[in-house]
Structure formats: C-alpha cells, structure tokens
Image 1 (cartoon, rainbow, N blue to C red):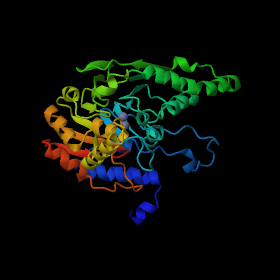
Image 2 (image 1 turned 180 degrees about the vertical axis):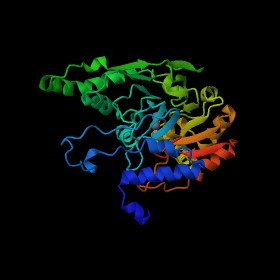
Image 3 (image 1 turned 90 degrees about the horizontal axis):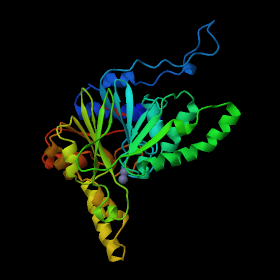
Image 4 (image 1 turned 45 degrees about the vertical axis):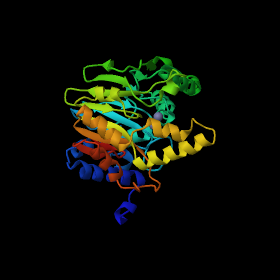
Length: 370
Ligand SMILES: [Zn+2]
Ligand SMILES: [Zn+2]
C-alpha cells in the first residue's frame, strides 16, 4: 500500500484500486468517463453555503444519466463470508441510466451507494439462486426503499423457485418497521404493494424473463446443484443474459461447466463468469475424499468442488460460446489479507486461456465499471 493510499478511506482506496486495475487489465480507459458520471455526489455539508444562502441546502444534484449499457461489478467476493474490501455477489446492468440488479449479497446496498447508482429507484432485481451470499442484503434493501419514502414504482424481483417466498420473508422483516412508522409518521404506503417476487421456471433452453423498451432478459438453469440434490429439492440456479441495443451481457451466477450456459452465452459481448482457482478445486476434492472416508459423503468440500468452475471450465464455456470478453467474479479463494488480492491474478487468467479462450480476460474488482 502506498503512502498516498494511507491518506484515503478504505472505500476510496478500493475505488481507486478498481479504477487502476480496470485500466491495467482491460488495457483501455474507455470505462473511465462513465465512472466519472458515477462519481460520488458532493454532499452539501462539504460545500460551505454562500452568505445569504438558505440555511437548509437542497438535495444533491445527480449527474444526468449517460446513454448506453454499462456493467458495474458491485460485489465480487466468492462464497459466503464478509471481508473488508469485497462485497458478496452483486452486479448491476445500467441501461440508459436505469439500473437492473443481479444478485444482492451482503454489502450490495452499500456498494449501490458507493457506485452512486443508488437504491431508491431500483425497480428490478434478478437472483441467480438463493444461497445467502447472493441474497443477504435483500431485507435491508427493501426496507430502506420503503423507509426512504420516495419510491413510487414497485420493485419486481425474479429468481428461481423460492423467490416469491424469499420476498414475502423480506416483507415480514419490514412489516414491524412499517407498522411503527405508519402510526408514528403517518405513512400510507403498504409495503406489499411495492415489492413483488416472481419464480422463474429453470429451463435448459433460454427462457424470456423480462422485456421492456431497454432490455430483454433471458435465463437458463445453471449447474450449481448436482442431480443428487435437485432430485430431493425444488431449488434451482439460473444464469441470465441481458440484451440491449448496444451490448449483450451474461451472468453465470454460481455454476460448474454448463452446456445450458454455452447456449445462453452464444456470441455475448461480456461473459461475467464465476471462478475458483484450480488450487481451491484440488484442495476441496482432497477434503471431500477425507470426509467421505470418515462417513460423510455429502460435505461442504464436495459441494464446492462439484458446483463451481475452474479457470479451465470458464475457458471451455467462453471458447465454445465464442464470447468476446470474459469477466471473472465470485472469486475463490477470497483474499486472506484485507485490502489486496494476495494471490496472482494469473491463477485465474492463465487457466482460462489455456482452455482455448483467446479473447480478453478481466478479473473483476468491486466497483469496476465495464
Ligand atoms: Zn455464491
Ligand atoms: Zn451458490
């Protein structure tokens, strides 16, 4: 860490590192002007009011939305766990200034604020699956959307089986707060009228989830739960594709190698794909064998090894689908040292290339804009 970094807040340091790594890894500064439009709005407390100005300044002025399609990596931490510099999984597709959220792991709400996307006018959320590292911030997000008081349009949430139930549970969390504020502050909006969950059927071929005048969203079932589990539960995992008039972007969510995803991602501009280092795979295979020998055939280690993608798996999917650019996220392992990737990014990128993908490979960082 440079001495300059030590003068910055951790969040600002992370933001600057993300910018630097973006320019370095992508080999382009094309994303920088967009981030400038996302630059944190100056709060009034930092700007002395001129003499004679009203004592209460007006709300901060947000920059006008930029046209086009951008992807903002909000959280790139792999798996459940809280660390200082990476939030759990969450990404946003911003189309002509309108955000669509993909997953909402712990820290997403904070990252939405730091990115200056904000959360109050967020109307659409897509869940790849309902593991808690992809959903934990949902109750906080919905609760603060309601309490913020300026939300007029509903938030529609899409995801695999269980999503409607998850949204109902988040409403349950919010209800007591709403009861208090309805009596005590004269609130009139019933939270149930604002928040709606929709279960999406998981299919092998792409199924349309949403189409509006900015984007068409399609989904397939990914390979995050093995057959031995899906035989015994209704839960599934999804991957999403966003097609706008400028770009196509695929989010795999959590998955092992998947032919469904290859079909979904055909020719995509950005292939945002989870990854675990080969060393993580090897270690978990060894641990799963030990657990099985000790009488536990279904272990966490087996889950990790069987339901995530090695760099070679990512490269095979990317090459077969002929995507243009790979963006790695949900990075396993997570950093052991706060504030840095304490392993070489070549742990990920070399394996993707060795598997036959010849395009650009970007290792995602929190608050990276693509
Ligand atoms: Zn996950
Ligand atoms: Zn998962």
